[in-house]
Amino acid sequence: MSELLIMLAGGWVISLAGMKSLGFLFVRMGWVAPNYQGDAIPLGYGLVFWIALVWFAFCEPASVWLVGPAIIVSLAGWLDDRIGQSRMKGLRGHFGVLWREGRITTGMLKVWIIGSCAAGVAFLTFDTVPSFIVDMLLLALGANFINLLDVRPGRALKGVWFLLLLCIGIGSVSDAEMSLFLYLLICTIVAAPSDFSARAMLGDTGANLLGFLGGALCVYSLSPIVKWLVVAWLIVLHLYAERVSLTAVIEQNALLRRIDRWGRQ
Image (tube, rainbow, N blue to C red; front, side):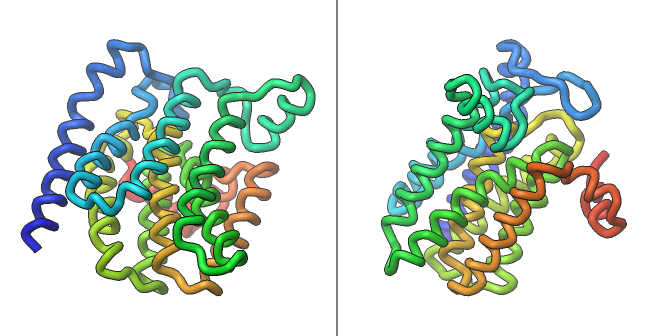
């Protein structure tokens, strides 16, 4: 228990110090972008999460097989945040550039990296081919699901908390995964004030990483049938988001609108 408390306390301190100190670096380096209101704020603040993951891996060496791919996913998001083409929206946009121009965008490269990391993590623990496929899809789609939400303050973090709620509500989080569950929860709570107040954007750097880890917890906490249902829902959501703005859908639904605006300043 003492080791767990030390690990969680370290994650809290690292996340808090990172959120407080990275602002100067981001502004100094010009790593800012306009948010939905047109205000220039730091983009890619999710960098603090993979810094915190280094401490988690130090305390839980057996987690390296998951932490390593998660950091690679985050670095792919960082690349897209820094040099990606913001005019390219959705998978259709990136595939369209590849088809029309024969050019691989940073977004397309990120898709390949996330898919490879998802396949690698799923391969380590799969029992059957169907279980490998559902786990890989859950990891990959989970990473992009949170990224889809990261267009308004706090929305991505609420998406992560939704995945955690699935794990604890209709799944079974084992003792082996509980440390990651609690660590991820604490780190996102620490990041919430800056994100909810629109002082910083997690960016692909943070959204993809959080979605990947949330997907991993779903992989190890949910039953096979529930995992397939979640994957089916994520596929439908991604296809729908290619054609319709999720923000517009949320604004038109009273319950979703209230949840979306909760905590936002």
